[in-house]
Amino acid sequence: MESKDLHGFASDRPITKVEDDLLGRSGFSTDLADAMASWHGNDSLVVALHGDWGSGKSSIKNMALSRLEAITEDKPDIIQFSPWEWAAQEKITASFFQEISKSIGRKDKSKSGKKLAVTLKKYGRYLNTGETVVEGLSTALPTLFILATLVGVGGNFSNEAWVNNASTFMLLVLGGWAATLKWGKGFLEKLSGNVEETAKEKEQSLSDIRQELTALLLKRKGPLIVVMDDLDRLTSSQLRMVFQLIKANLEFPNVVFLLLFQRDLVEDKMNDGMQLGRDYLEKIIQVPFDIPQIETTRLHSLLFNKLDKIIEQDKSASNMFDSGRWGVVA
Image (cartoon, rainbow, N blue to C red; front, side, top):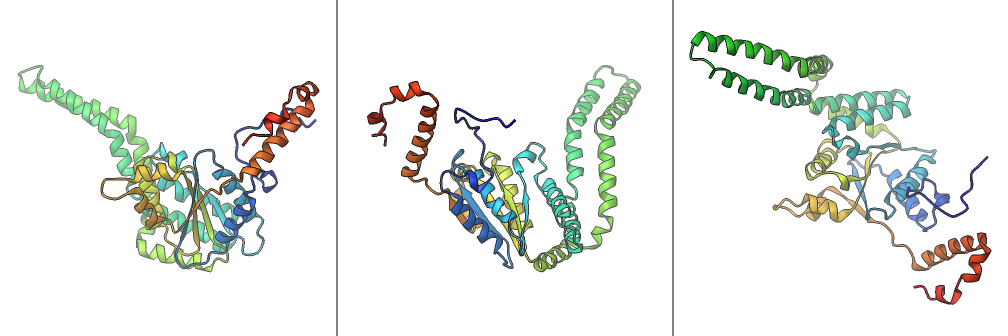
């Protein structure tokens, strides 16, 4: 039996369908979707949708994506990626290429689609070569620091040279063993895997892989649309990483980025004393949009329609309703 909401309650969630639009923004979302779907430039296009938290950015995004999914001719590939979900792991760049490769591999079973997925994965792995080494070393630093401290302290327990040497040797062995148990196994496994997987890829230069990606993307009839939401939740360094990823590493033809964030928050985070955040964003984003304003008359109509439904469900409420008072609400 389907449940029915008798009181008009609604969760604070973005809508997903045009049919649920009560604020008259479906037209804007449709125009936005059509504009992105028609992009076939030799460079990438970066579109931004600005709005405060709770202003409806995600709802407009969902309606635009619904429109894009309905396209049958020259259908674009849509990849949604949330940097905020990966930010805590400091793996935004690595996870981006993994996710985009998986998404294309699932959606496009054609020969060119499979090749594009493999090449994107290869490109991402190339860019992240050495990440495992840095990660492993950074994890090991606390252990190495403690080990060095113990060795220094151990040497102060005795003035005998052989005692100092034996103590130092034992501490080194135990410390090295502990460090290996803590991080060495996983680190070496990752490192050996990366070396094996990238050995053949290293025969190609980064420029070669970029040219391969460019050729594959130029052949596609529909653009590759990458959607990134909640960018305003990232830190300054994470934002710079994302923007570098967009402009430096993914400047390819037939690629469109749709970025959603609260503009003033991101601008403040991008201020570095040398350059204003607003100026920085202008160099990244070609087409900025602000959330369309909601007409006051539409809000009034929506409010009173909801009130009428509530009053209709409770006859006693209609006797207490002062139409004169509510009639002057502005």
